[in-house]
Image (cartoon, rainbow, N blue to C red; front, side, top):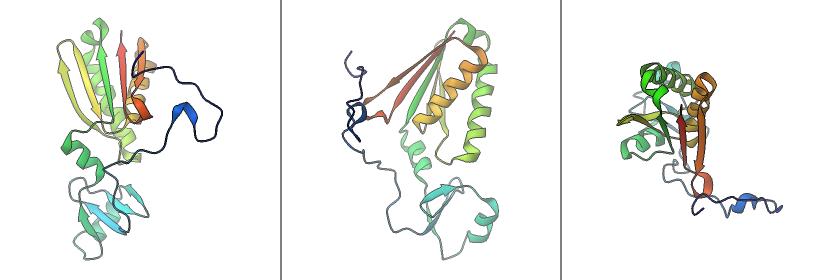
Length: 172
């Protein structure tokens, strides 16, 4: 089975599925930073989290109290560092590709209102397939499940080691 091997829980706390510890995310904001504004997407960083708030952004923008930075999600997009990849294929997809792409965009927009981190990086047609790169593994899973709920078909998740990257395959 190689990389995608069957993992079983050992029963030890903190040792679920062979988990050996947290992985360091190079895109996490440095500690000690109070408030920041992303210069690309206008997201705000406060109380150790990123969020969107237009009113607060208007008040804080241009002030000397906040630091202007590029948020981790915008940096991932710039560096083309996906957290998940969704691959869509099949005859049904070819027939209804525009309808399915619209569903993907609407779902990503809905999720993106709640979470700054969840965004579609890009959609790349590869022959009769469409490859969708997302900034987080959770968004790739969410989009795959949304398509499955709407159109059924075959849905497969393949996790990389340490569960920080997922490939989702949907076909019909």
